[in-house]
Image (cartoon, rainbow, N blue to C red; front, top):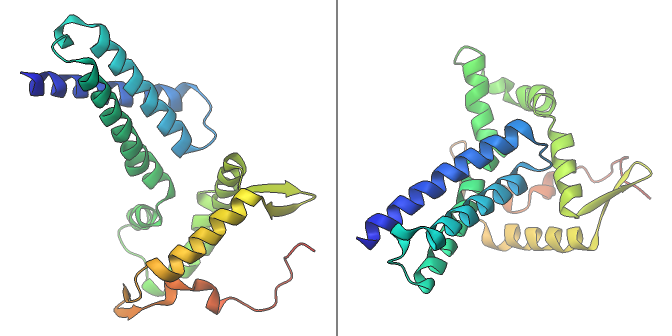
Length: 198
């Protein structure tokens, strides 16, 4: 009996999560997709929890069980926010599939670098999107046309470099070859550039 009621309540949560997300993206401004999706999921979890706490059919659950249900829905909200809108918004893999579909189902392999640099960056306003996300996250600030790391950004960049160097696969399959290229992608960077801020 409790399992079935929990599944009913969880179905209510899913409906609320989808409805709130749709209302948010349709009628309100969104600064960062991931943050707004998290916010929507938390609202859905709280609304569902309020129903479970107040509606008589769910009275068979104790306070501890209701708290556990809220925690489960909050975790589900986080997973949904990452797994659906954020992945679709950020995913180069989905872009490749959509671009192949747009171009009639096929693109020459040798032209993908052109697709990425001349189409992907512009079509998805990638620079604007990523700078906005970093500004909203507090990891960068822009001063006199110069994008600068904040202390928070410095810590995250250091963590990312450490993780990439030590905890990403050393033998990763890339186009038929196993390589460690992505554990240190900067090894192929140009040594001298003219775009740094002094």
